[in-house]
Length: 338
Image 1 (spheres, rainbow, N blue to C red):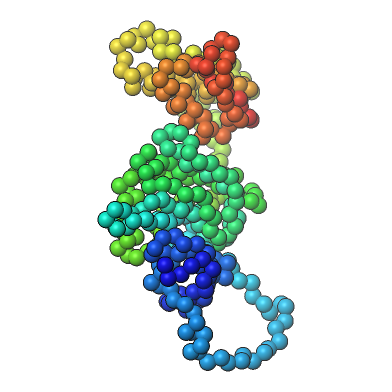
Image 2 (image 1 turned 180 degrees about the vertical axis):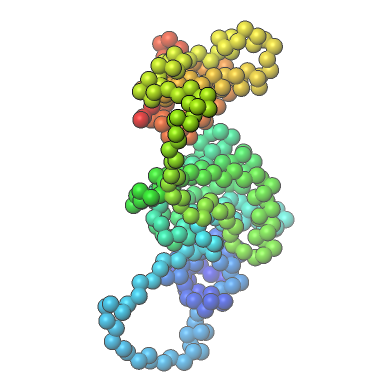
C-alpha cells in the first residue's frame, strides 16, 4: 500500500493538501481536506513533498483586516451532487479468488446540499423487517454517515425510509416530509458498473430538491355540496354516523366470511388486511386510546404484514405482541396518540 493512515497527501487535480484518515481498499482511501472527508483513488494522489520543495516561497504582504470585512465561508459537502438532499453510496471493494474487484459492502451517506438544518428519522427495511433505524440531524451543506450495508442485502427488497423536519420550525413550511427509496438489485449492479467505468467513487439518488411549503387548504362551500345532492353532516355529530366502533377485531378468516374455504391464501390475506385497515380507521375517527387485533399465530404472515403497516403510522404511539390471557401470542395491542 502506497499510503498509510495519517499520511499527508496532495490531490493531483485540485492541488489541495489533505490527510489519509481511512484505508478503504487497495485502490481507494478516505481523505480529509480542511475538515471535509471524501473518498479518492490512490492514483489521483501523491505525496506533497515535491511540491513543497519545488515551489518558490513568497512572503505575502500583510494587510490589516477589520472584523466586519471578514466573509463567512459556506460549509461544503464532500460529495459532488446537485441541489437538494441525496442518499449516496460508497462501494467498498475487495478481491475475489481471481484477483478481480468485487463490492463487499456500501458506506451510506446522507448529503444535504440545501441551506436548511434538518432533523431526520431513517429506517432500512428488508423484506418487511426493520434492519436498521436512526434518528439524528444534519446541518446545511454537510454530509452525514448513516451506516454500512452489505451487497447481499440488496437481494432482500430493501426500502430506505426518511422523514425530515426543520430543526427551526417555519409555519409557512410543512411540519414534516417523508420520502422513500426502493432500489432493485439490478439497478444497484448497473450503478456499480457505471462507477467502475467512469472511475468515480460514489453514486447518489435524489431524495428531494426543496423542503416543501405547507399546502393551503381551500374552504369548500357546503351550500354547493348540498345543492349538488351530497349529504352534509354536522362535524360535531359526525361520529354518530360512523359504523359502531370495536376495541377488539378478530381477523380469523372464518370470522370474516362464510366462503373462506374457496379462497386462495392471497385472497384470504387481502380480506384480512382490508378488514384491519377498516377498523383501524374507525378507531382513529372515534379517538380510541387503543385497539386489539387478533391475527392468530399460524405462519406469522398476517402479523408481519400488520406490524409492517403500523411501523409507518404516525398516530401509533406503540404496539406490542405479548402474551395475553385471552389470546395468547395471537394478538397485537395498538396504542394511539392524538
